[in-house]
Length: 239
Length: 239
Image (cartoon, rainbow over all chains, first blue to last red; front, side, top):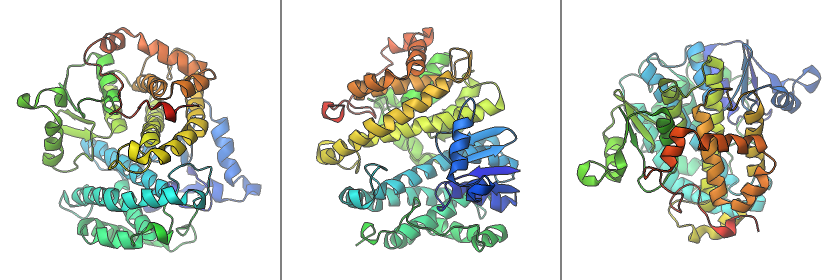
């Protein structure tokens, strides 16, 4: 039994762990989405962070399994992937999977900073001018660079997935990245994806994997929204 | 023989790999610091990134070892640590080492964004207004949060290091973080470190490890400077 702790009400970074657990068909509890009366809610996260002895989490997502309390999305996936059959087989590939996941983590951080470039202590509206400048740089320089990089990874090896014939947590995260960027920046995403057919195709293949498709159609999948990392503010997209 | 590829002229993220190789007493080549005529320089990095088949690096630092070309600082340290005796022994601790290293990576990214909050395509001076706002939020909210978190990690277990009696790559990175923040934000660092004695003590212990001390006194150690991640612009520090 895996226990995932992540802010209720948004996909955020927790979604990368959810997608992996769902595609694996693993038994898990999404703790903070349960009612507070049943030990859920954001208070369950705060309690776990406070009470963990030794190396504690800095922030969610947090995975609890077999007595281990582990935070940081890429560290969680590096732990979880091999246990649920969603990591590549060879040791070299496993190091490369972590490498790719860390570059994916950079996309999440930079996408967050498009709407909160200065501080999380202020609302988007209060840092809108800085957000406009940061988003322009993200759309024009960073997005093509990231997607071009992942296009090369998606096309590097024969087979439908980054590491060949077997799907891995990296493929699931690439799917989520593509859909997230499409949600937040529909015009910029369409422009960039026109030049990255291998990445677009990979996302489409992941989306129809039976377990992923069943998850996406279920109430367990939260919709993208303006509390998450990928937020749609039309003025931040291509003009 | 390890080969490290990192931008010549700055410590940056490559320094975390250098410190680990140096403390281990490993044989390594700092490729890009050799003259171009001897196959060094930034061109050596560009060539490696372009010519790597399969999963290529997105950016340096890059470690080349035993046919593996691996990028992303934390992925490199996760690979390197156990091979050179600078990772904790138990499997659970190794996952926690990676977790801590990923939170350290966030410090590097956020320290970078204090002087380049909008885009790397412009100079610091061209985004100075945004940098002032971002730096204030970093000093007042993020720095105390990060250092408080690492204080707790440094004090969690008996013994001089985060994982007890044996030094690990995480301790080396914590040393570099403390010295980097002290360089960039001397006033803010002094203020925050006054409340984090375990972290300050850890940095001081790492600094006098014989191999680390010999490295720091050698020409292999580049000084902090305004090309790196931690940059000293006095107006970005506490008033």
